[in-house]
Amino acid sequence: MKKPETDPVIARNRKAAHEYELGESWEAGIVLQGMEVKGLRAGRASLVGGFAQIEDREIWLHGVHIPQYSQARWFEGGSRRKRKLLLHRAQIDKIERKVNESGLTIVPVKLYFKDGRAKVEIALARGKKTWDKRHALAEREATRETERALNRRLKGRPD
Image (tube, rainbow, N blue to C red; front, top):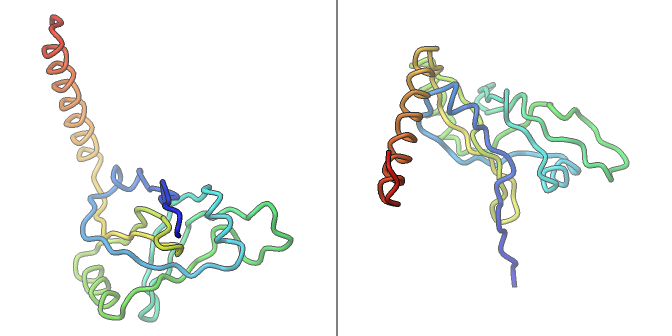
């Protein structure tokens, strides 16, 4: 009997939602070397600063930090080396068309295990301007404040 994974998510790129407007997303497999899987299972990976590029009809993930497994005797490659992503050819072509037409970028959003295999969720993203970021923060703060006021009223406290 297979034991259920309580939290299979290894890393989230929260900064991506702040820095970019996220669009369509895909789940991709990731090619890892031997001890990188154990490093991921330790749960210390970071997606901040990561991005994906299409080179020769293949998608490569750059700038994602997967730390060296501490118990490993040897580790080839760097912790921020580029890694190949596994997608169907039609998906790669669709992503490439959208990136070339619209000037979008590909960012990793989430890194997780699914059925024992490491997966990364990538999304097409368009960079936000500074005023967009401020507007999003102001909206979020206004929503929080209205929820707080509603909770106070429901509990019978004065405003």
